[in-house]
Length: 383
Image 1 (tube, rainbow, N blue to C red):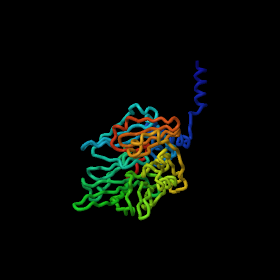
Image 2: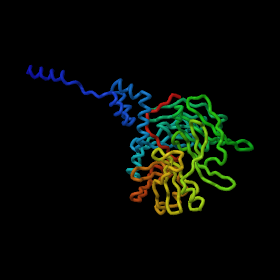
Image 3: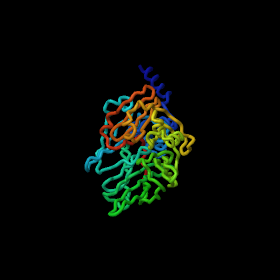
Image 4: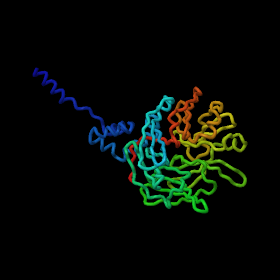
């Protein structure tokens, strides 16, 4: 008995405890969902320090951005009922796997009437419709930024038309841009304002010369916000993309795919306004071509017109024209198997290119606004 005890004791002294290098632990944790990382902060002080480190937050954000997956993404939309507001959230994965079933919805009751102006890096930009300020919210880690100053001359008659929210990676700043419509006694005034989170005031941005954007929500890609515009002059009426560079705070024009331009000029594009979206971290457009099919194009290199690449063609006969032509606002997501999610405030369509199957997720019947895709992250900027 004594010999066995001594043998076991010696063995314990001989075998060191399991050990993983810090570098390996770092890379393992990078690929874990946020909800697991929050739990692992309680394991030991060293893990809590690592997961709380701003550099780890940036690295984790980089990994989930390069490899987006519906498993860790949710859709968020605000419900405004009289003076009350709820923000509704539901997971994306069940929409694709069981679209006919009701998803597990999470509702956040808000103290004010908020409108979601955009989503970026796991942050939602909220605008208070009653008081006229914006703030950042990361629901996954329960982070809320300070309120911004109230937008200049805000009152209940003010209306936000087009808007966008994104990240200026050069200056490490989050920015929101809004175009405000003000009703005066004898006239209507438009002004474009921008707020950089962490600063003390809103700044006025010169309006883009020409026709205002015809799509409201700016799509954030590669440090820019993007809208569709119908540029009019004496000789032509051309639809193109208006781009706003968040670093330089300047406008640029981006051409749509050549097939859209040619088809539009020849009268073969059934709907003059395409859908603008972001798929696989790239700008994309969807438009009806020649009244026979829907084209989805991807801009693989942002700002380079020659990089537009046709992603897929969907036969027109698959969609009721009355549904697809005028009532849909956004391309939300596309899977590797060719399943596309297109949404409006009250309806959505899932289309699978391989089997030509249509599904209508029931959750969208409860929404009032087009939902925003939220990527769970650890981001909590100092602002």
